[in-house]
Image 1 (tube, one colour):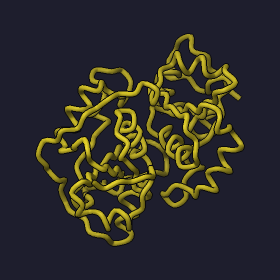
Image 2 (cartoon, rainbow, N blue to C red; image 1 turned 90 degrees about the vertical axis):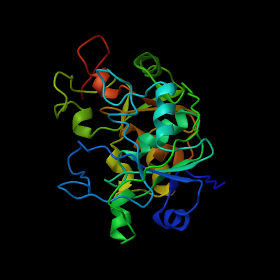
Image 3 (cartoon, rainbow, N blue to C red; image 1 turned 90 degrees about the horizontal axis):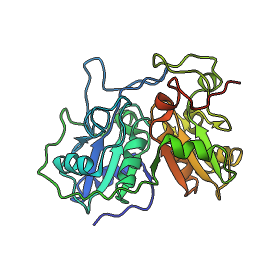
Length: 282
């Protein structure tokens, strides 16, 4: 069995292990909505890393009939859909996306939430792979049914009630991955009817601050960033617009050595709706 002990792997490691029978490669791309971030698979272009399978958590591996985007599904739905992708319970899973480092961290966190430890993110994703002129194919792999087993741990994703309490607890820190202008209520939210601003006592850490050239910053740089916002003995809950870029913060915190982590699944798509949840502006 191929084992990994890091949440982040590089392109050379992946190329060296592509032929390993335990390896499962999943394209978890989601079309970016953040200005300045673009998919390389657009305008009629398509490429996949050899052996990749399509893990679509935006439309398929998500809670059906939800008013909120790509919410975490039940463990039964997750298990069924992942088995269709040929994923086995002993698999070593590598997730990537076609932006660089954008949608893949959420896929990583979903598998972690479902009890799978052997999963990592490809740093730099498909853009870096293409830039290095490594081999690609023009279609996804279509494997036989797998035997993946999901075992949901509720601590990985949390709801608004948990977040509301955490905002006023000294041993917790909520970090918001949206841009500073959205956090401060200067820029309007992209979703119609959603209030501008942020949660009281939350701190702003734009996910872009954690990236350099489409890759995650060094461990030293990440530690310097997080040290200015929280401590490793506090629980860190991340949030964003809809639960995607919050997972970039969670990945970065994990790489930097933070262990007590959770993602607010509904994020601002839920919190910002008209209602009684508190919103403030700077």
